[in-house]
Image (cartoon, rainbow, N blue to C red; front, side):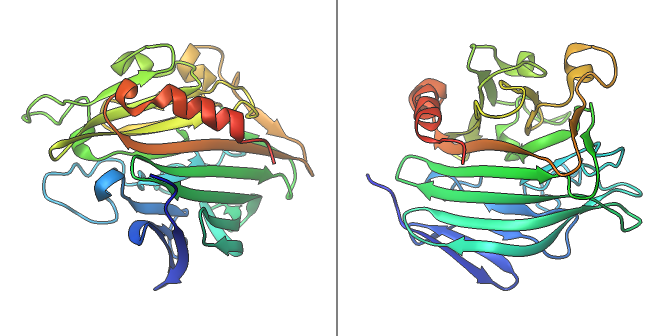
Amino acid sequence: MGALPVKVAEVDGKIRVEIGGQLFTEYFYQDTPRPYFYPLLGVDNTPMTRNFPMKKVEGEETDHKHHRSLWFTHGDVNGVDFWSEDKAFGKVVHKRFLKTASGSMGVITSENDWVTADGKTVCSDVRTMRFSGDGKAKFVDFEVTIRADHGDVTFGDTKEGSMALRLNESMRLKQPKGQPPGKGHIVNRAGVTDDQTWGKRSEWVYYYGPVGEKTVGAAMFDHPSNPRFPTWWHVRDYGLFAANPFGVHDFEKKEKGAGNLKIASGQSVTFRYRIVLTAGDEKAAGIEEHYKRYVGTTKAR
């Protein structure tokens, strides 16, 4: 099956993305601590991410209220926490859309300011999100350029970040106490599995498990042009799934600050990732083949 048409349109103060005439996701950018995508619907419209905190659903855990489906941010930017939603946290504030487009690939490009709790802008970003899909997989290409346009910017050494998903509760490796054992699995490109993938470096990670009667999965790819490729992974047995190129102290037990990444005033840094929503384990889903196509056809822009 070939590529399905993608429609991108503003609906009720959100950007709605449809693939093949059906809802894929919505981009929330107003009155929120940071822009995010919810829901995220995979093959056969399977819900791939947790509902909380956007919606309370019986049986779902309500931990980590900042885990908003699909998002990008970081826990230490010039010493400000943009990851959590606790006291005095920073916000990523939507400024304007630069482009929205429909077609064989959908596109959203936006400009955002990173603002402290007391109203100071630390930096800005331009992010471009591209959407595509066919009958076997759906894709999100996420490209974000961090701009040090308000002085030097340091992305600090913490595990709390950065390109992130919070997956459907039934895909977890470890279910809450008192519930049946989890049936989810994690695997990286080197073949490391489950809990052992946390803090390891890899070009890709695939997190899969049951949703209803299906086994579905989400892969995240690190682009070779990214700083510190291949990235480290902050991927947890309860469904958090994040690429984090900064948290060296936590991941490798090195001195605090070893993972700091400084962007000099007037300069910028770009990160690129692909998220693939598909079905089956990593072999059945062809994750390695997907990755090779990604790095072979996606060039630094």
